[in-house]
Image: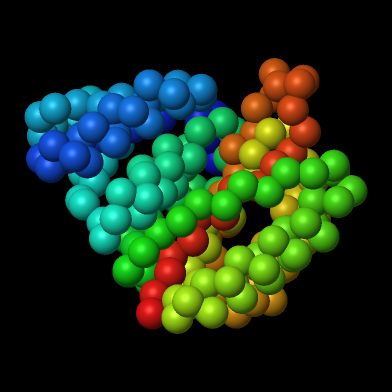
Length: 184
């Protein structure tokens, strides 16, 4: 468990990727993410993340977004670099899907959106091989987290569950982010 105060420093020697990192950090609302222009070690307690160019800029943005959601807010799950590398190894392209809805509709929305997303990509010759399921917003009970994880597991994809809860967030309900690893 953590309280979301792990500083993540993003770096890329590729100028196009560095610009995507800079853009993402500037609009990231949860803090603890920085862009650095030079390679650094993790000796100061930060998580140093080197981002490589992906097949397209949307994939690169999706990978950056996935890293940004790890360790943001309170988390029941400890995810590390090896988990992300495992997710990356599942795909050649990466995408992000956000699922919102009322508390009672979220499980149904997850199932429907994932079913439609899988079918849409399949019709284009792409298969969802891995999912980072990030549950964000207000804290929810563990049995609800298990429900969302079970729904994704029902689609027979590799799943990495992640939670980002914000105890001071009274404006937002719970929502989901699916970081998808796609392969042809």
